[in-house]
Image 1 (cartoon, rainbow, N blue to C red):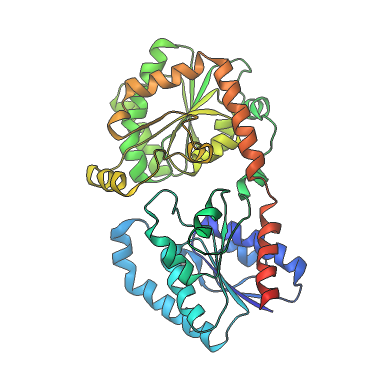
Image 2: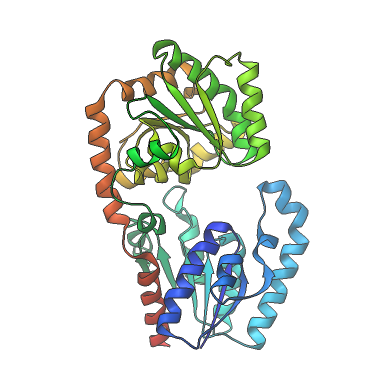
Length: 379
């Protein structure tokens, strides 16, 4: 048994590593090859190129590295066609993986795509292209398979891996003890994003929001987890520029989950962190800012009224979203204050998020392995 896979980002590396471990339970002698990261390699994967070679950020980086990426894809296809695997699984990274899947499928190799692109957020013109490339799509969200079925494309909901990892029980007391915070202290977690561009656009607005909120709630304490030294320096600069040195703020390297778990409510940039906050059963205010042209294009392409994953999963505005021109310090502070002043509302949204957590908790790796085994069985 020979299974080829490509994962190009840290999240895909983790997903694929768990899938490899689950598949090894079914196929102990299976060989796993392709492009993967350190977690996949630790699980027994043979990576022909390091996964970070596929990691690109933004259009400029894509254009600059396009010849290298096309060269890797061409060599990968050549190797896989010369020695065809029993199945190829593209793990996320659709811009790289879908063309690989299409060419392999045309040459007779069975193909799957793991993690649906966000067809539910943008106009669904990509669905048919995905269906031509992949025989089967494994989806992380329960509403996605129906979209594919409407186009005659086999798809299966396999659950979300974060839902398996995050505990169902409230972790507030544990997180506060870990971070040496008082049990009754009023705490707001502030997450301006992981990328420098995100933090650059949001840091000033978030610091002004913190000042506004602290004016009304002078005892509030802010936890601000940041991933890199560069993003930490950007946020520190914003604090200094806004004259916010008097605020009770703890800047943290990482520990985003601990910060959110310890908080009473969360101010968070739209992205995966919104799902993580929901799995931690935290009320939140979601915001985002992008360039004006990017925002206009996104509004034109989008056909959902929500951008935050908790609201998309609930199919309603469970938590507020303040985007672009609406993401003002005044409006953000008012939305956070509304959560702080209403413990019953926080309790209600926590119950909603608990039900959401249970719906996503499906023993993801084992369920995905069963779908792959079904494909191999049909072969």
